[in-house]
Length: 97
Image (cartoon, rainbow, N blue to C red; front, side):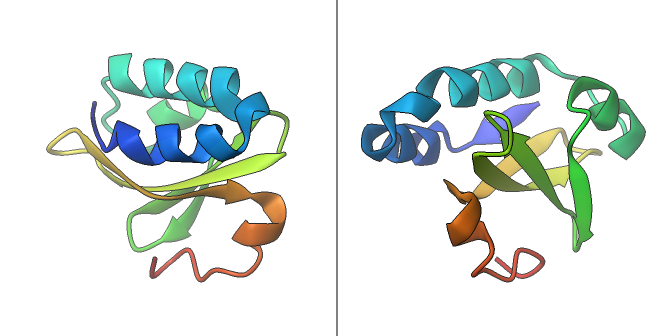
């Protein structure tokens, strides 16, 4: 999968340094993946949830952090829309972010 953009991950872990290894691990796994559907993605990331509108929520670092992404399986692109703490996630409408 091609991921747009790694910069959002970097910006987040500059503020939350303890998230770096977990976010980089997510990035590496997602970047190497060749998912065709949600079930295949779920086999890589057990805690991923579909929230509608092609958006998916990934729990990162034992649910300390959340990453919301648009995943377009047919063209193999992931658009990172949000990276934040669990508390920050609770304040967003992830289906429309």
